[in-house]
Image (cartoon, rainbow, N blue to C red; front, side, top):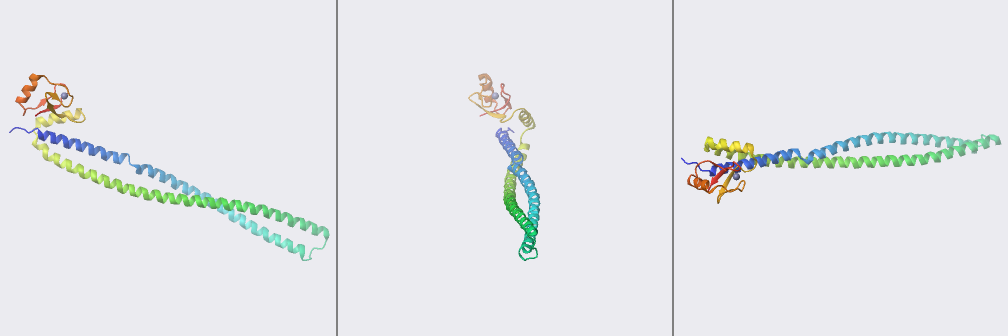
Length: 238
Ligand SMILES: [Zn+2]
């Protein structure tokens, strides 16, 4: 029985499709944006933790300041009471007490300013923490969506791959060993098409013309396995 070279062309088409799908698969796995986002997310989480620590420290300072200010307020009230309730009558002592109250009040003013600054600091850190937390959930959601998308794409590619491979395993046994061997050998050496048409005496792989004598011979024996003398590709004579 004569071999139909169409089968070899079909096999080549399938092999090229399989090659493309394998490439797509590895591209999907290798150049996935998910990896970049995961890196960014790890960075954000570290930042969030750092801000948390900072916030804790600054908040502790704030509480300490508030406590100190409360104590100072109590002390001022106590000294003012002493100043006005008549327990101290010595003018020298009174003036010294007055001076002390003045000093305490100045200290209180200073501490109140410090407290406001500290409050701003804590507020800013709270805001930064909230922003980071929002970003972390945004990234987490984005990664989840992208992973689902990647999974869907991979499944699609896998499905096509399986279909092509199935067709290939149906066609391959129908191709004579000698032809299959030559074809596989060429595929190992060349990329792209290794089975090409001979059109008007010209190889469609390297676009070189074949000697007319040889072309005549080929046309007479189309069923034979022919190679291009220039590029060694398998030629299909139509
Ligand atoms: Zn050629």
